[in-house]
Length: 126
Image (cartoon, rainbow, N blue to C red; front, side):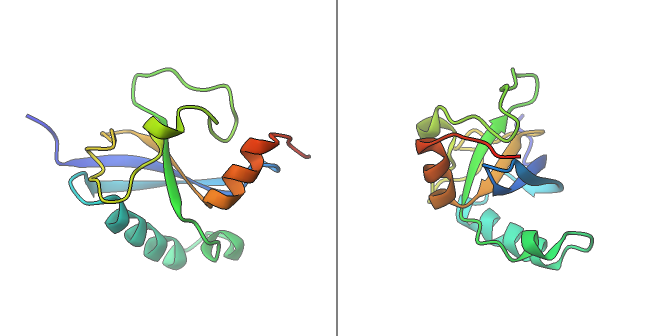
């Protein structure tokens, strides 16, 4: 029997170049909701969550990508892998489950324009 609900860790990625991200945990996430529904929920939750600095609350996130699955190998990248976008970026119109999200999945939430710019020139700054 498949589990309908999951615990997901979400990285709010503000800057790929500066490796600036904040992890958040979401419990009891319904896996049969669409990607758009989950993004809307997360944006509302982030804007209201206490303890998050304002730059993270007000950022224009628009895309989610799977970083890591439970019991799977992790990438060496500190923020997220730049590979397998076709397979790992969550597609609009699909359910979380259909995109491969399961219990204890780790996701990145970021702005696609920033990601494309970083992917074209993956240089980090400190």
